[in-house]
Image (cartoon, rainbow over all chains, first blue to last red; front, side, top):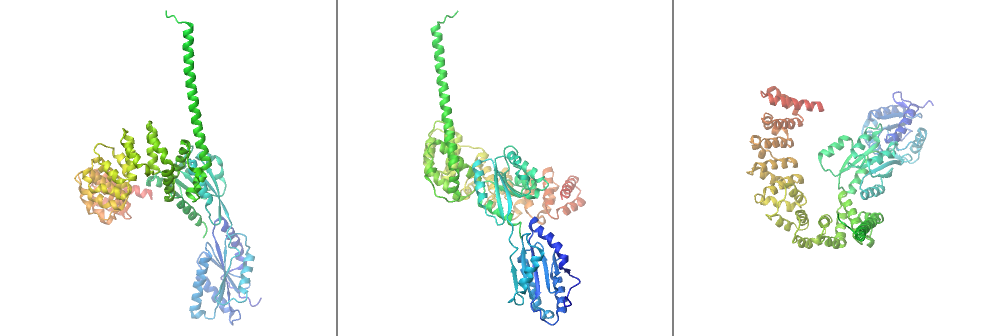
Length: 291
Length: 348
């Protein structure tokens, strides 16, 4: 172990494990992708490993953002960076940028790196597996300097169940909405559609009390508890953020729309409207949940 | 004392019973017919709603089972179509509905137009317009020759406005018809832009009701092409038309020059001054402040209030009002400026 070069001013592998476990769980809970980048010197036979390690650590430390975490692996010749709330796109851009600087500047001429990128979109990966997998791809033969390999083993997003409630009095239109929403394909989400003809039956159903994300497409005027009353009830629930509320209305007035938005709707749709537009809006709403 | 024989009494009672019984049978038959009508209608809705959805939205092939057989099925189709047209915009769906109605529903509504019942005739006229059954235009013109009610005539105008705008323009010039402003608005709002704009060409020839309705409809349509027409009306001799044109311009919300509005800052009518104060909301404060300051000192409370509200909407509005409060001698204007500035700061 005498040839290990451990930096004092950078976090070490064993210190990062706990943080990783928390971030990994928040990937699911908060739908925040994290991306891990691992770096290694491409030519490990070079003459001054100690001096290079200091230089690389200092360089990487100066280039990461405040929300990124740099750490050194226990073998002393790998560096890891966790990019929180970032996808592989940002990681690739980061590597492209730092590689360009390292190649261009004279003071770094003796350094040549190679890297791996792992996007994490589920909570099945352990810290040990992550490290092992990346070390393995970085040591594999044929990797040349400044190359970037991507590990896709942990990028599969879990499918999330979304409850959908359609509250509309007109039976024919209700059926149209039900068919339309049942046909929508949203990557990584599955919709469970239920229909109600009035506000009261929706509130009696208790379907809205579960912890699932809940899309509500309702009319503003409904028999037995109208849409605005339902909106008020839902927006005063403790976990009201799980509701995505689309309100449909025949009133095409700025006042009515303002009133609805101030009451907490996410979309105010004036009837008659284009079903394709509704579909597009719903898809866009869900696309925002993951990076 | 009147003497009645038992036989006579029995005869009367028997007669009354016969009448009662006949009436009961009539009610029973009517109820049966109604219930059968509802059954047929509901069965059609149940069996074919999905087929209609697939045909209209998913481009499934048209099936002849959808063609109505009898009034009950026509009513079911009306329900389906009106649900779609009221809630969904789709050119493709509208085209398919129009095509179907012209081909398969025409004969039903043509028959309804000759009904003795006003409600059936009115219903047919509404459907002809909603489902765009152009092929019944000639029948409608024939129908107009009968003695018809004002409501039916109004509905006919609506049909002409949709299918034959030239005929509509001709009919509306008829001096014998005189609808209210709101009725004219309901007709004009359906007109295509190129037809509607013709009203501005010989604006002064139209009766006042139509003139007012044209200006208000232009505001509702919020189309840029009416801006110049409304601006021209600012120099009209009738003050009411000036005020309505100002309101229309405010509603459209696009002000490209302030010169046409400046004369109204000193108008004799407070409503015109109020509208100018509102219109200046759509113009940067740097161009309008001197006029708004003048309006802030207006004799009318509404004008003062609106001028202050317009000033305060600007990013530097509160500072401008503070400056005004410090330099002005007008206690009413100062009070208004203080109130609006305080309200704005309170809502932040």
